[in-house]
Length: 47
Image (cartoon, rainbow, N blue to C red; front, side, top):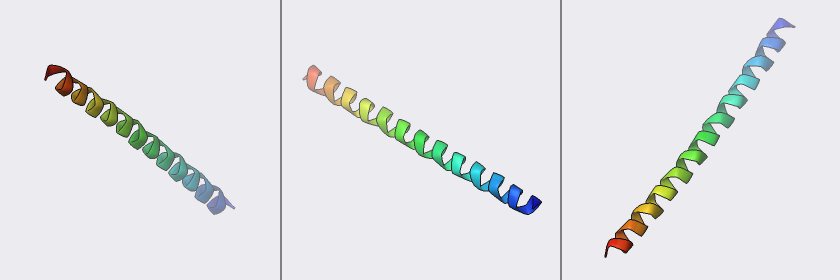
């Protein structure tokens, strides 16, 4: 019984960790897209 409890806790922790990792990747991608757009706007504006 304790093994099942520990396995479930571990699996829940792994799921939560993977969700957090995915959220970090999405946030990073959004920041990079915004940065690229800003650089493009600055490049076009200065020409």
